[in-house]
Structure formats: structure tokens, C-alpha cells
Length: 92
Image 1 (tube, rainbow, N blue to C red):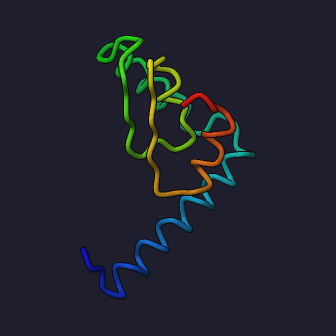
Image 2 (cartoon, helix red, strand yellow):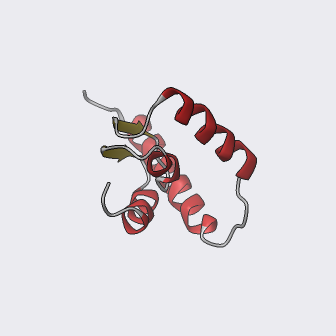
């Protein structure tokens, strides 16, 4: 797929935004706490432990890790998010 200049610039802007969010999350306490806990409850109900799981838009990997997969793979547009996820959950 060939992207035009506007698409490339938009993708760069999105990556920069989420990289900035990742850096800010290092200092934030309780960022989206209730929402993230609710997501974990819903996905744990659907996905039993030991399944193989791929999460697109994994952020820092908390949801993926909470699902206790036999193999977990996370994908994210933000290199900063992936860096933090790899530090927190090196086995995924």
C-alpha cells in the first residue's frame, strides 16, 4: 500500500501523540482505573487463562498480562508504549 504525504504525516502525528501519552502515564496515578478494570473483567469472562492472545493497541500491556495467556503478543503504534510493555512483561 502506498501512502500519500498526508497519510504519512497523520501516522507520524498519531505515533508522536501516543508516545507522549506513554511518557505522561509514568507520572499519572489511576489513569482510567475504573475503565481498565472493567475491561479486564469483561475480557477475563470471554478469554480463559492459557489461551493464545494477540492484542492490537496493547498500550503498556496490562490487559494482555491480566488475561494470563499461554502466549501473548501485543501490537501498538507507539514505540514508547511497547518499550514499557516489554519492560513490565518481558515474557510476552
